[in-house]
Length: 196
Image (tube, rainbow, N blue to C red; front, top):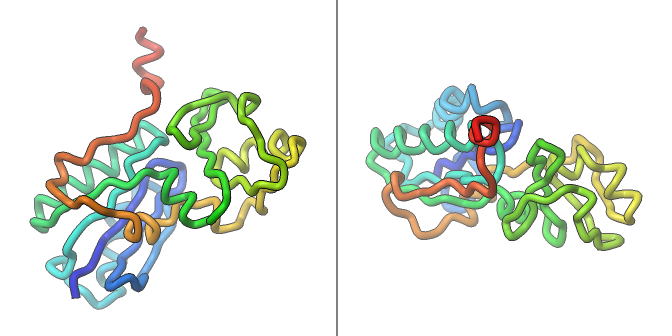
């Protein structure tokens, strides 16, 4: 069985999963700084070997510039070492896949959120649909604003707020060389804006 190793480091909470034939063999939630240890643990706990991995599904953002770079660098290193193809998956798409019918909202910091488009907007500029569920760390951060406009935001610990890597594996398509997977940046990184 060829396995898909999926991970996303674009938000404050990194997710990783090992999937075989559509079945989740293991999944972890941690931080980008422990991604490689998480991957090693997933493979070991599944009783698999690195050579069993047949592809990588990588979260490409939008999200934290540094987090996205960590994920892409790890993917490129793993793809080279394992000689496997990779596919990029939008973090917003994976988040939405975990909460069908919901609006995915990622905290973009700087008093903005990332939403479908993708685009970065001030939370006050969102056209909130009354009765619609909003998920993601942006929905948690701006819960009061969203709920005052009639949105439904699940409790903070609801798993729908995480871009679970299992959904990256399910959505991944167009596998190819990892170096061709591009990050999905919606705006300049904080460092570039400070220098400019």
